[in-house]
Length: 458
Image (tube, rainbow, N blue to C red; front, side):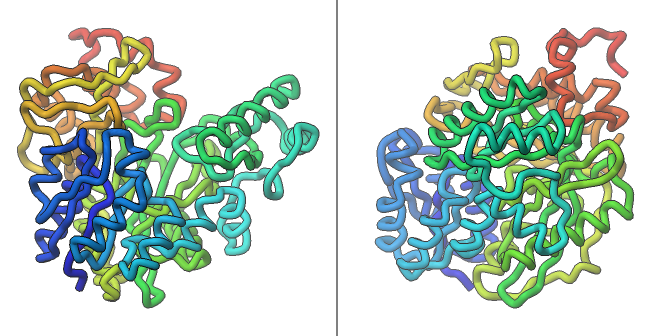
């Protein structure tokens, strides 16, 4: 087994990993920026070491300092969490060169799957359905126009190295393709130092469904069912649930098999997520594979009873999976809400500041993953997600009612948050019925920001 893990991350995911390690008698080293001195994750870790100033480029993205910390403190492995360096093949490669275990897939696998156009070609080889699109990278405006015409509008231009909705532009007509293509390339270059883009047919009003997989280093791959991630704003997820109300058992089986085939075809190891779009006619298509732990992994843990981070640590220790596919059962329903320090009524402007008073709700089948405490400061330097609120119920309706109650109890005074918006979504008739897609927030924002009235409390 691993003996000492350096956590190359911060906030709630660092806390989550530390807790799993402590339960397995694994020591932990937290790296932190000067801004995070005294943060909860630095207190909970066995050791903590500063790796640079507040800016992420000088601390949490500083490979030299992080690797030096790992070697200096005698670590045998590095867990990257999500974000920052978690999907950086260079970092994974350098971890290995230092004689340490990277808790994730091999660097070449991250590289192959991180390039969306290359990943798309790989999936086609292993019979995983992909969205109709260009054959690889599109180089010129003329080629983009020809491809779009062949596919039929609307089309989506996507950065090959993209993520988080950056380097992605929509074109509804031939008149829009030139500007969309050039803007996507420029944004891709600015964010990923790579201006390669490809084009896909836009699936109108899709649902975003992802499948969690686990793969050990002995060739065993299983899936843990799906997560519904269609409640999004600007391609950023806000609410996730499992299982999805949009698919039946046959679709679930086929999606799971496709995800396993994708992982096997890529030579994947550790935890990962295969993402699909679900069309209105019930067909589904691969869009990308995330080569790391996902923000929303707790909803899968709640319905399967499988600790995904623990499994990551076991796999990285060279152990075989504890589970076969027949062992995986989805029990009940789980919902996760992402609490974000932002002001929905002011164009979702981030709202850093000090938490003057904090009350975290509890109760039966309630889990809150956070690094918050009363008196802590939400930094302007990092992502503004401050907590993940997860509930489980025997049925979707029970989970929905439980989440409403939990949001009513949650208090984080001192900063503005999206708590009210999350609460309003839970009262939307379409959300209650499970009839929503990725355009839900965009199409209903005005109504969702309107104060809740008694006659709307369904």
